[in-house]
Length: 295
Length: 325
Image 1 (cartoon, each protein chain N blue to C red):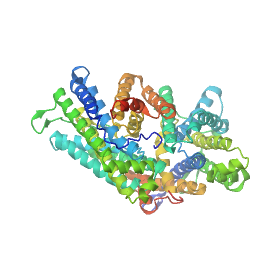
Image 2: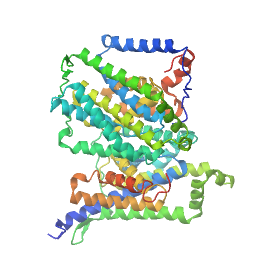
Image 3: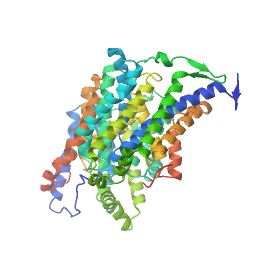
Image 4: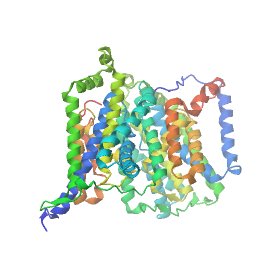
């Protein structure tokens, strides 16, 4: 058995890969949070619940309509985004003129409702979701065994992140979005429909979360609690990275995932807390976050 | 939470003093005779959460800071009191004081970290730190993980009064609650409290007036954490149990809900909210996740249409009659 720093390489790289996958989810979720926060000034507490809904829509589609994984990957984000848009139009939009904390409280309430409903219907033991047969199996790389599906999750998330970054930084639509984040009133005055942009941005952020949920379904079982456990870590990731930069969210997400994976190998007891400890250190050294601007 | 700030203009309520006294007197009397009419354990549970919510309300209602991690003070004090009473055999009043001091210490550290950021970030930081403490509680050996600390002895108050007697326990809890609420009332209506409200309403202005805003925020945070700790300590004696439920983020959410429902920035609002939420929990306890769903619905309704809360709505009516609620 090969070892590196006294650790079997298979275990080390296995955990690092798992960390990278977690990091991918952190990146995609914190990216969505940052987008929504930029335009709506709301922290979307239901983001975790929407991630969970993505996984459930995939499972429901497979079970009741025979929709396979690839269909789910395309449809689940749309379905969850549509629900998100309805929530934004009917509820969130009433709060924009109030203290931002009300948005947090509202979405927290929505998260409780969504989670409660799914718990009531499906329990908390989790439902398995099979890896699609195109991505089943794995490669033996010599120093570790690489399941194809896990490689796919990392690559798909990376593509999604970079695609989103290009969309926002390099396209005209993205320029509108960035402008509206800076000064919505002025952008509105130039004849751009800001309320529609806000709604679509919320929908897009939610769709990202649902997409991550579908990706996660074959790795973790489909579980009503999968989102709430994740979202608090993602909050810490957001505090560490700061929500000022899209690329910042992506990089921070992946790095913290890797760090978590590494901790699992070196000192497993701290694996669940290491990201929070990093947050404490960042707050001490650079309170605005690694990529943050101002308060 | 500046929107529904109730401007309690600091004019001395000369005329109202007697009416206020009567109002408070009635509430005290209700509290004293209640255990003869209602199941005392339910009342005590309500009082513990009412104290917890009142302590939380000091931050949200009077400083405008939304902490989403107050369960760490509540739950950890419960552990410490339970451990002190069970393993070290301390008397209940010492065990509760110990829990309170530990919560104050935790509050000092957490507050010191969290007040570096404002608004939404403050909420996320407190939530993340609470989650950190949740995992510590899950792994630390003395908390006994999923089992919690069970069979905590209530002991003898001052070594004399037997608290295993339900009525004695009730009056102990009620006394702690009344004292703490009175203390909070005095804090809010002191010059210190006026500065807190100034920070809530306009922080840059308070800074420009020369107030060390961060210092005020930190002190308020410590008081809030300490009293949340008192609530958790007392609860662990009432139920003779300290468990992971009380450090979980659900408990942090519940205390927000109680305060919001009862009335942010009111004196008696958190108590009203706490009793309502505890009642809902009791009625729907057998219906699984319905409690969570209903709590979520109340959250949504409160935020969208009922931001003043119960006591906040009643307040103008009472104010006309010289009563500050």
